[in-house]
Image 1 (tube, one colour):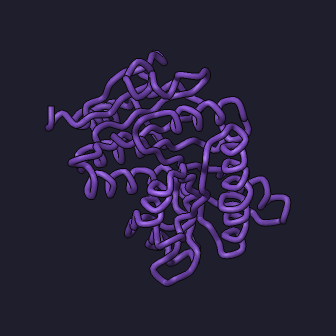
Image 2 (cartoon, rainbow, N blue to C red):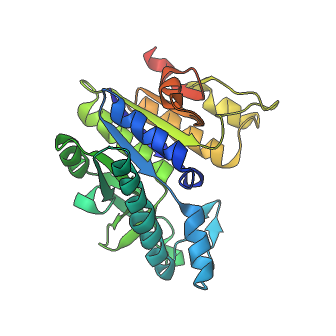
Length: 264
């Protein structure tokens, strides 16, 4: 097995939570990867610098001047602080960005807007493999390199799914991969705000059509369904409050698990 954990930016300021997640990844017998976001901090710093953040359908339209802020926050402050935190709790960690070794190559999403927001066009796991082989926990900021060689901002959720799919393609036969999205929500909720514990991939569109899930969660579930159809063993969406929660998420005792019914 291999474990990929993506933590939302809202959790990065909660040191006990991040510490617990890092310790659990490092203690697992499976190789692990930690991916982080940080969009809220980017918006805050950009505002202090007089840069107005703009969005389309919830996606940041990263202008060149804001791209420098994205690099500073994600690849700079957030990534470095996570690596330092890991070392404070005795975990050997190595900070990476999507630009390292061409790990994440991005295709510009809105070329007509002149921005640097991109979707994943190519994944190269060489840098992650090198970190794992040297027994480091890779900690990844999802700023990448564009097909034009310039900097790009890639959504961390999308990057996590793309990496999980490539990992499954290359190593899935001997190292099935599980992906966990950890944020400040307990999982996917129904109309009564009750947790949906399991969602087969072939039921995602029905949940969206019925209005059970909307907006950003709908987009995330569509991507999750596509990822499990392409070899990712399972994807879990949930929260983290106490030590042991990551293991409980992986077991399916907490959160919402997306699986591929075609393989079951």
